[in-house]
Length: 203
Image (cartoon, rainbow, N blue to C red; front, top):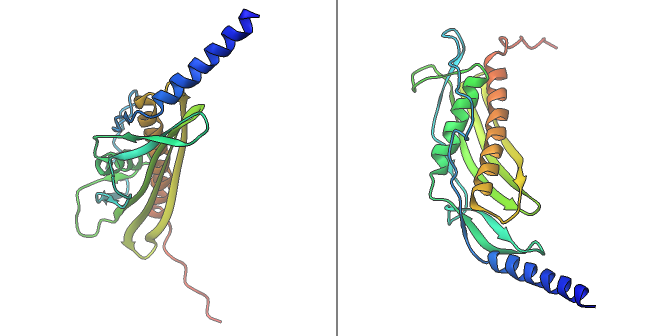
């Protein structure tokens, strides 16, 4: 009879401990490149080029908040915060992924298309695993075919969440940022290689 009671007590203790931890804010580092990321090879000098303007941060205040700690019932009980500059983080990710897609990144100059955009979401969560999500409104401005604007969303699942450690949120966010930057880089690379527009047939 004592054994079931002991097990019940241990379950209660675990629930109490987890609930208590859920009320403590976490600090995470959100940096680029991600740990273990291979160096970026510079594209050939003949590759198409763009310049990248710093993203505009349109996330709601407080902008140091990048996620929420949730209790066992999924309710937010504390914040995940970072001291890092997310505009620099996101802009660096875009530059690297553009180069990985074969696009040269150069300083601003006349006649060079611009890649820019707005950071509208950077959110980390943890339940059974860490999850990150990033949203951008991004554009290419170069005139004619070299022009688009689109919404891009990157999502990623990180490591198993054991204790809602701060670093797990940052790692998942960086994985999500990489996915969003990769989508943008592929779109830019495709646009830069478009053929000249075809003449519209007369009716």
